[in-house]
Image (tube, rainbow, N blue to C red; front, top):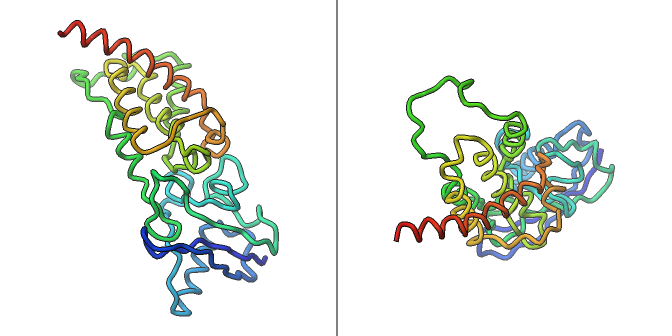
Length: 254
């Protein structure tokens, strides 16, 4: 099949960007979208031109690094699919496909399609872990967890941190990512001791880098793991509860 790739090129964070179009002829419809970029970069190298910079790692829909806006949609036209899982057979033969990086102030461009998503790391560092002492190792079956809670925690833990939720949101909000990283710990017994300090720390760090959620729902639609916006409701509820709980504890200490 034949495709025309209209790709965003930018030499660095402070350089002016522009679109460049590349004609891809007689490529296999069974290729993944990232394999198409491999072929493009081989052609550019052969011509002595600068290859397109883009993030990738596992190519199995697990790592979340394949961040591309394809025809205005995060990860492309398929739902529940990362860019590395998108195959060319899902695109129309002869089409012009526009490829851009994530567009968000919290994701500054490094080069071409590669962006800096370290703000996500800082949100997790602020509270996405458990430090409360739990004593020596116990048999897993000794800790009783309701199936509903364990299932919900697993659903939240499916987040791969790709940033599609931020890229799709008109406010560049990171509530879905933060809610997923918060919820998978806070739904389990081991996460309860630090639950309310965790939610405040993670939300406040998130607000340093990203916009605010206004319930557009684009994040859920763009998420390759189809994480529910119900987790945002859980995050918001616990954040409000934490304001009262932490204030009460501070008053008791004083």
